[in-house]
Amino acid sequence: MAGLIETLSLISKTMDDLIDFTVNDEALSKDFEAFLIKNEIKIEKQNELNDCLINYVLDEKMQDRTRVLDYFLIKNPSCNKDIISAFKKSFKSVFRIDKILKNAYNCTCLANEKDFELIPLVKMTNLRGIGLYDYIKARIIELDGAYYILEIFDCFGQFREHHANIETVKCLIKYPESQTFYNNVKLIELQNSTKLFNQKFMETFGKDEIIISNTQADEFIKEFNLLVEGKIDKIPKEKYADYKGDFRYFELNKNSEEDFIKNATGGFGTSEKPYDIGFFADTNSGLYIIPFLGTFNEILRQNSLENIENAKKCVEYIMLSDKVSPNLLIKKDKEHKNFIPLINNVFNQNFKDIREIIGCFKEDWLIFDKFSPTMVLYNSKTFEKMIGYKEEKESKEAAPSAGRNEPCPCGSGKKYKNCCLLK
Image (spheres, one colour):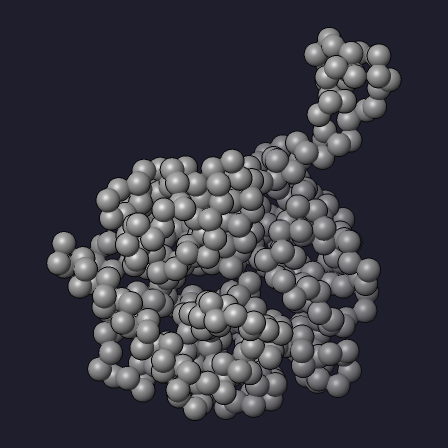
């Protein structure tokens, strides 16, 4: 037990050192302030500041693209590097409490369907509000084969499974690697799905990238899923010809997780303005759905930031998006000699080759087994439950109406007033 207490104390101390350093280091404190302004985050309470600081130091990069944790390591070479490494690989997900132990919880992770024994950093008596079969949204780290709850963001009662599923899907979109963390079975499943998706994509289009209108995207996703599942034989190539609209960039939605969920459940075509969407079949990580990829291609083709509306912001969007794989950037570098000069121009950098760009913008791909959000959601039982709940709810709402004394449309044999009308 002394070993556990010592480890918990060391993790807590390292986190405290990180927070103190962020507040007191001049460069980092200024960067944190810029981070708050950029993301329009307003701090009103001390606990909100603490939560925001933790997320900043564990997840974010400074304006020069240096990860906050790496900057801390440079400035504090004597810190515990094993714990910093564990912080780098931390992930958020939702866990169902299956058993409450003396010093830990036995949980099921909804993201990767794996069982964990999670040890909180505080005494169990401080967590009495969390009961059996409740759900917790938490950040987890692994250290020497044990799993620790670094922070708990929220708790949902056992009867709020649908809400827990929604929060899990948000985490999967933000941290797609969490679906394969410590679960080789899920990793193999994703690899097989990726191979199948890429094979069908190449057979259908003869290339790994197509650009279509957002108004076509929902139908394309539906048809391509049917093709992968063997429910239709083919998709006519000419049906999804290259995008013919105007190339321009505008901000879609600041809340990327909410936006992706809305789009994934049928909403790319709901935008008031038309725009282009790229579908890219990455050999290693699956099918990507990338808004404004066609606009990005056109900027590279023209080798100019002057002729396309919000061209610079479009380049920033593509490069900074965690929904764009490094393999796409490698492809663009091979196709366009001006790729690296354009990136240097936009970000005021002096990159010499594509490897430096990958190391700067796509560092996470060098650490984790990453797959596209499309592949992760396709292989998620939680996402399937969430969609099923939505379809079931919509089906009930759209059920044919009946007179109060007529037979109920649900087929129960009862009168409508004594059955579904009551529901």
